[in-house]
Length: 317
Ligand SMILES: NC(=O)c1ccc[n+]([C@@H]2O[C@H](COP(=O)([O-])OP(=O)(O)OC[C@H]3O[C@@H](n4cnc5c(N)ncnc54)[C@H](O)[C@@H]3O)[C@@H](O)[C@H]2O)c1
Image (cartoon, rainbow, N blue to C red; front, side, top):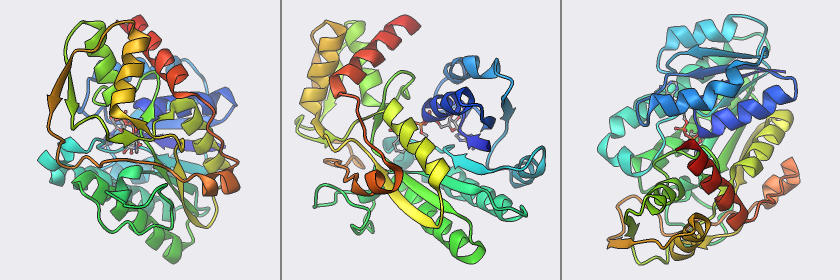
C-alpha cells in the first residue's frame, strides 16, 4: 500500500510510519514542524525513517490547500491517508482557539477535499481523541455515548472533524475511520504530556506540578498498542466508523506519579495546584468495538511502558 501520514514527524506519526515501512509499505510523510514543540525533537523522530527507500518526507502545511491537492495527485496513487497532523493539547487550545480551528478543522477539510478528487478514493483514518467525551458521567466511555459537551476548544475541533468526516463519507462514499486515542505514552511522547514532563523533572531533581487532588485518572495507552490498532484500522477501514483505542485501565494521577518516580528511581517533589480548566476528571475506554472490528487487544502493562519511556528519556539526554 501507499499511505500518506500527516504529522509523520510527531510522536504517533513517527512510530506508525516506522511500523508501516518495516512491513514494506510506501509512506509519504507530511509535517510542517509546527513550533508547539522543538523542531529538533521532530527531526530526531524522523531520523531512522529518512534512511528507508520506502519513506518519502515532504515539509508542508495541511492548511495549504493547493499544496495538499498537489501532494495527493503526485506519484503513485494513495491507498490510504492516516491523518494525525494537528495542534494537540487541551490547555493551549484555550489560549489559541482560532489557531486550533485553522489547523484541526480547516486543515482536515483540505485533506478530505483533496481525497475526493482522486478517481479511487483512499481510505481515510482520522486521529480523534478521548477528549470528545468531556466529563462523560458514564464509564467506560463507549462510542455510542453522547459526545455533545466537549469542555475544551481542542476537544470541540476533534468532534467537529468526526462530523465533517461523516459528511464526506455520506456525500462521496469516502471510507472513513475515526480513532479516539486515549492518552498515548511511550518513547518520544510529546514533551507537553504529563509522563514525559514528570519523568524529566524527577530525573533532574526538580519539583512537579500536580493539578487537582491526585484522584483524576487517565486510560494511558502504550504507543505499540496504538500502532497495532492504527495498522488494523488502515487495513480494515470501510464505511464510516468511530472506534476507541484505549487500555480499559484507568490510572489515577497519584498512582501515575508513583510509577514514574519508581521507574526514575527517585522521589517526586510534588507541588499541588488547582485542577486546570479544560482538563477532564477521568478517561476510561470501552474497547469492545475495537476488539470486534480490529482484533484490538492492548497488551503492554502500564509500569512496563513507563519503564521503557524513562529509559528512552535517559538515553536521549
Ligand atoms: N498523544 C496522545 O495522547 C493523543 C491522544 C488523543 C489524540 N491524539 C491525536 O493524535 C494525533 C497525533 O498526536 P501526537 O501526540 O503524535 O502529536 P504530535 O504533536 O507529536 O504530532 C503531530 C504532528 O503534526 C504536525 N503538525 C501540526 N500542525 C501541522 C500543520 N498545519 N501541517 C502539517 N503538520 C502539522 C506537528 O508538527 C507534529 O509533528 C493528533 O491529531 C492528536 O490530536 C493524540
